[in-house]
Length: 312
Image 1 (cartoon, helix red, strand yellow):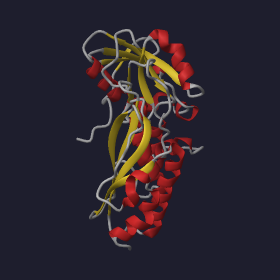
Image 2: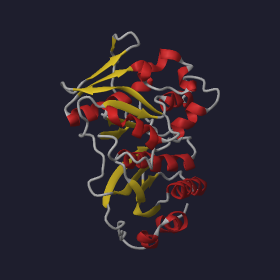
Image 3: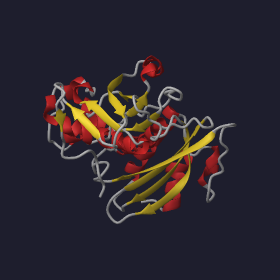
Image 4: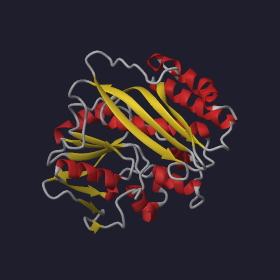
């Protein structure tokens, strides 16, 4: 096993952008693009909580970046660079590190970002990883959770619940014949690059479950929401399981799709901004206390045991 500084020089310094100064200094020096505001987000991934011990290291690295990229997408931000902190147990060897660094390199190329610094430490047993993503937006152009208006429609990108079922497949709890659901659990697709400023009034990424993240917009905007369970888009692979996993699809999270509050008049511009990406209307925001009603196809109220993922 290499020592800390050899490890940094071998695996992480090659990933550093100009602002990272070769990872030779105590801090990076970052110059934002002219006339832009900086957007920052940080996310942690823990072994056995956010990924399984036998997950491929390259996919762990890419998911770490993509979880944070999804937060930037929800703010309407363009990614710029990132900081990385690792705490690795003694059993992590050179092959794991090489594959992890290769995963970072792949998504750096895909999303045009570079590593600019971070920290490296050891742990007793489990892997702990943290990435801080830095992005930029036009002044005043960042989307938030508190801008939804009564009468806004609730829209989501992509399909909801694939990752929840994929995790069950990885745990041997169901059969994923095509591998699609498993892949969606291992490697999300952050919706970076959608020009939603002036179209959506509010946005959030679906990380902790559709209902819980919708609840965050309701609370921040002081509104009630109604969604129609039958309108929540499902992939053919998820739809094949019927309603048996409906609660899991709406509450388990890890989709990293976007949930948007959009005025009815902006439905066509939203579709145009999303291009070939599927986007679906699933409900509406209304005046009232910040709570969510879920209706079935007959308009009957549905209740679930939870709204989303809770760490505590």
